[in-house]
Length: 226
Image (tube, rainbow, N blue to C red; front, side):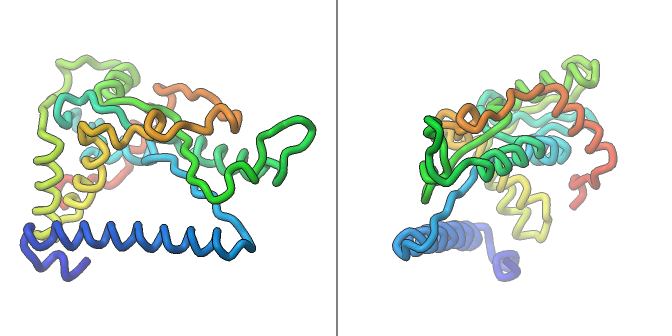
């Protein structure tokens, strides 16, 4: 990463892309090795970004609840799947509570998930839906906020440029904005399915989770000047 910071944006992009490909290759190789060895199995769990954590960081989901500023990526309508901390914990606990093999007429078991990636989430929603929840929680209106729009792809590029300058905020922009690209890649619930029902995960209250994020933002170190 230090070497990346010294290069130009045109040089950083292929380095980051290659790093991503390298990481994916490593994961794929490791998973295949586990499966081929036949001594054990893996289960990978994807829960998306943490909702309370991410919403509390202004540049992440684009909603700065402290300063009442919003940056909508494109039109703010792209949906992503995200999870609260409690839901992540329930997902892991529910999964590990399953029997290894099907028993008692219940077909749900760990064996069914062996060597697979499973997807769980709390909400699949857009920035506009997040903002609507924030407005309800804070008892405010659109007029009380400064709302702007920015191309998701341009924001991603800006993040790369800021990484070049050694600004941590650039990594946040790059990391989060990618899932909001209009290709819908961040919507794992509809792209990959969900184990929420199978694992008996509850439907959560969006405004309650948003309220936790709003309170957390008040004490969270802001990234604006970094």
